[in-house]
Length: 340
Image (cartoon, rainbow, N blue to C red; front, top):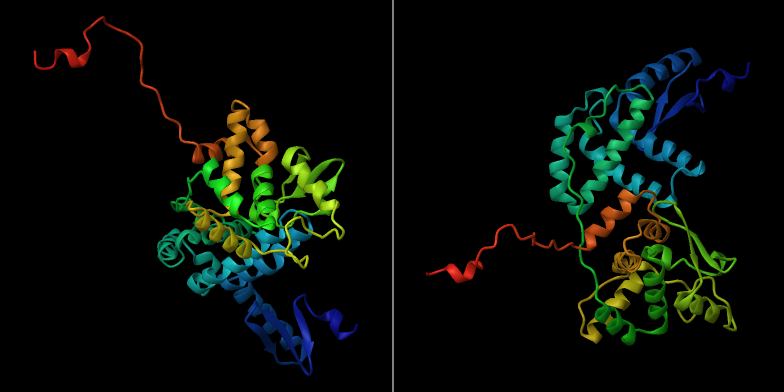
């Protein structure tokens, strides 16, 4: 048989020697002859590839996650987040064997990340939890140490912008920012999705898009201001790829449009806000206008369960309880008896 057909998966010929990929760190080289190289590779693979947490995280982020994207089980954005978030995990626990990582390691990591990475620490810990869940599925562990510790609380912004703030910024904004504001308020979409909306999303008098963060599909009727934006766009001499665009037709970045919006907020004399604040406003508006219809909220927000939608609404819509007003005894008012 040709030499290549005798090689185990992951071992490749390299001149007169052989080599295997050592995570993202580089290549591991094995000397011949062939039988010696194969034996050395198998010993190394059993000890390093399956034993090293660093190698596990590399394989999880750069092999398993891309496969999930190809199978349409994960979005490109989430994949990029995982590939970024494995790096601090590798620095902290990469040298510990997979079977030796315990809840104590994870707790120290959690507390350290909360100081060094702020609110993003929660996402890094979630990445570790997913990676070790995958390790369990592969039979490398019987438990998940990341799932055995208290999780970091989710940092929540509870600010709900007012109509006066929105209108103040809108009136001072240029046309592109006004379109972005309208799209954000009417669709409840995240900023990254808003800036990607364009003619390709229009079908059968509706706006269709797949959320960049969750890959959930949303369909919104083209009525009111939303419909007017689309009609105005198609009426232009040159139809651009995105509804929100610069004079030369190029699309804006989230950072770029955010900086412009903050300047317009300052010019209008209102507290600054970003496109991300329009999503909670849109969702709570729908919740209130429909009398608490969570199905209507879910259709717009893209949430998959009523529990998710209700938790999101409650985060931004504080509920003021009324005291118990039922009369039990016919007694004088409290204030009338004081001092008598």
